[in-house]
View 1 (cartoon, each protein chain N blue to C red):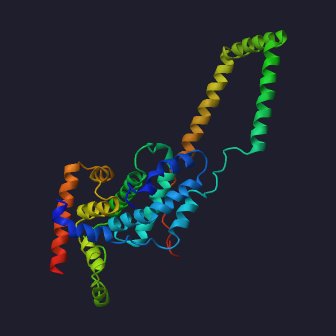
View 2: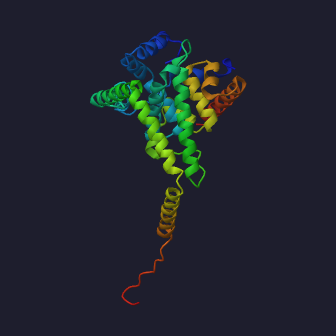
View 3: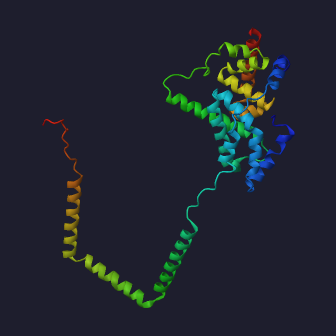
Length: 122
Length: 182
């Protein structure tokens, strides 16, 4: 196959490549090699603030977990909450409040009738 | 530009250098392959602006996925493959958003001045390549860029080697006919 097209091959390989438009290389380099580094998800002061807040939270957590009085208070609080929710009066008021909230949501989300605007005449 | 040239042998080293934190090494690869990639894109897209966009997109994609480049393989084949598929994607989008089928030749018919200019042998050959159907034009362009590296051409186009050889044979036949009748 090669011998058959020797002249054509010679002409083909001697054919100069198309010149790229001026500025293409610069544009490629700007988009790749010299592209500005992407913005970090958090800035240094944000990382420091989050770290400090987490450290304080961990410290407080350890402090409370190791305090026996806090454990007792937590148990009492949970029991009080359980008692409150098992009271029929509390449950009644909760269901009334929930029902009103649902009703108001339905009333406000109903589509409003919009009349077409006529020029001047009703 | 042939990938077997001595200049191409250290492409892998340049990739490794860029990956090791010296991205300016990629600049050397851009310098080395910019012209060839643009040439391939121009032959595929037949529009200088679109070709420049595709070439830029190809280098951008290559830079971002440099870590996926297999050491030992040819950078030229890799970048040509990325460029060719960027062109195909763009052509596919154009076809999807256009009601009409794309014309076989996007360029307008050459005027008298252009015809006079085409008397040059290189111009005639270039025009004959331009007039080839897309599948033959791409194969002949890669043959021009890669030399007789049929495996590399097959890899870029994701075609069996037999198909590449057949397309190349037909492309050369058409080119010869076109040049004889000129």
